[in-house]
Amino acid sequence: MTWFEERIVETQRLPLFCFFVALILAFVVTRVHVRLIRAGVGWFRNISVGDLHIHHVVFGVVLMLVGGVTGLIVSAASTGWYAFAAAVFGVGAALVLDEFALILHLRDVYWSEEGRTSVDAVFVAVAVTGLLLLGLRPLTWQTPDGVPAGRQVAVGLLAVNLVLAVVTLLKGKIWTGLAGLFVPVLLVVGAVRLARPGSPWARWFFAPGSRRPNSAKMARAVRRETHWRRPVIRAKIAFQEFLSGRHDLPSIPSVPSMKLPRRRERYQRMPRRPRAHMRKGPFIASRTVRRRRRPPGSLR
Image 1 (cartoon, rainbow, N blue to C red):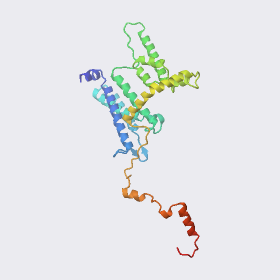
Image 2: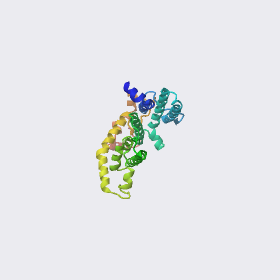
Image 3: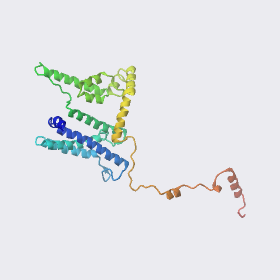
Image 4: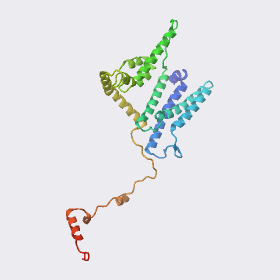
């Protein structure tokens, strides 16, 4: 409790902490709920009005509006109510980010491969909020007092950081670029190192079909992607699937009246084997031909 009071309450980070906790809890509860809906368990069903399926991003937008406006009203009046408004905003943000892929693609891609973008968006929000809770601030520089032209130096360093962040993001290194906003050394590393094969920087400068194609750079980038990044991506996808479920499996239709037939009914519906005189074969065919050659009035 001493650490919480010193690092959270006294530093006026209680609303941010409430937002952080509400974001994580709402995302976990939402994913558990939609996985139960997908599996057709119990009374868990989608919310529909007639033929209209209402996604939970709608409720997220409403909660974000309520939490944001409430926070603007009570921010100067009470810290407790401000923290409560931040928690409501966090719940709404979790619902919206959980369907970020639907907003990005403008179609229902929740359980497809593109749906993993929503989980990435939630992870980015959680990571950035956690860094803010630790006291880190993006693109901030402490200028010593008494240093001539200190403000101009700080502005120049901020401009350099922004350029390095843009270059790092264009090279396809999303996490390095976001973390570099808080730790500027990472931006230097990300901007200097070779770009990823499918990044815009590679398509512009050294990939086949670019202005100056360079097969050696492309081969080195593909080799790094295969040996270093692919295992990390597989581990990240495994962790995401542990939390949010598989995104490449079809959903099980939730039909309450769908029952398996009884054992006796299954046997009755099975096609019976043909009898011996109905089977096809050379001997039976010859007998059938002889029967057809008998005169019409003869006895059988």
